[in-house]
Length: 216
Image (cartoon, rainbow, N blue to C red; front, side):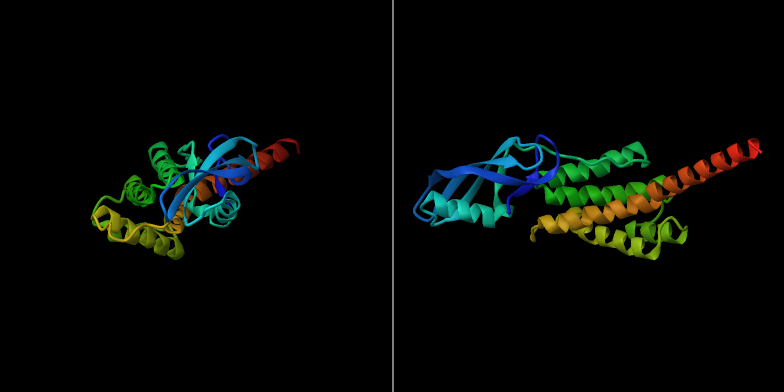
């Protein structure tokens, strides 16, 4: 299935192929094909290219591009971030940058940014001493995060440490990076967003209670 984050509407959407692919280059065994795709959400066009093994006709190329859409390279490219309400600006921007890296296939950079967000969160909560293991555990000890989120933070640390220490032998798959970003989101929700929602609900309740009392 050909899906991507659309450069125009910034929505993760399926893209439908229009017409047949065109072969743009190739040798005896590998051929590069290009095709026009339309975003199912906003209807804007993108160009997708794919290098296919011994694919000699447009119909076969179209079938493979539809079946193996995760291997398509897209034009134009656009880094797409994400908004994090109720998170301190400097941490929210770093978290959004992690998503922008992921959206253009820079998965190692996305993981590194997620690790940095984790460290910055501990720092913002006043946890300055120790290594990242200790800082994560301290976030839990001080009841900023539950045990499950603590364990999620350690998963970010594990993969992020590989990147930070220059261990680039194994590639980072898109699914791995997406999982790390999801765990990062859980951390930010636990520390900042869920408490903010609770405070807003409490304030609204108190406002209603005060209004009811004044009307009696």
